[in-house]
Image (cartoon, rainbow, N blue to C red; front, side, top):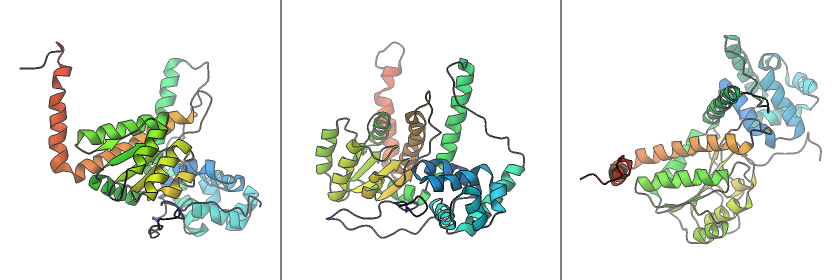
Length: 328
């Protein structure tokens, strides 16, 4: 099968395409509105790593030269990128547009935004000879772009549904390994501070044994940039099969973890390099999503969340006293 006819798995904006045996797949959600022109380049950066090589050529072309590509017919863009018309249309759909006509309109809008005087993006590759001031500036630039791209590509309907599930959950399990494990810990600590029962088992075996105890009304949330970490997928699968509501936070919307996700929240990352591994920028975008989830849950449960936050702050006040003594 060639790149031009290979189909991509998954669907824009939602969870798995098929349910495991023993549980019915949820009804297909209404497809989200096409990305705004300003979100197009963010969408390309997020999805390009999981595209076929021919689709990558189309995606990179439209992101690098939106004005030039907006002037091309579907045949012209296929010829420019050395692909086929079918590949161009599939790329447009994967990026969230119903068809190539809609993509051309977005490209024209993006070109107009760029022509309005916005400064070009900086080149931020970090080298071994960079002075520390340049390292700070480049990392700050990349983190800002990662956050902006994640915010632009985040499906707010999926986010709202995830918040609703978390706010009503009897119990929440959060799974993550490595840098994603730190994000999992961050979310559980936040939920605990507003009086919700949450766990983030660091041991993969414990994660699975915890997942076995879940049932409908519980929530299981997986954090994995690649979407293919077995130690994260396995407990999410078990939780899904037990009837828990499942959420995946991942940078790969067509990855294996989405097969077991009722709700999919996609993160963005910067281009990986030798001195800037993917774990750095993926952690930044994951933390943004976690903060959005937490704030949303705190809003929904404000009557109990506010007193719980105040109580936890008061309980730890003496540890912030410079003398280390409990205030009397």
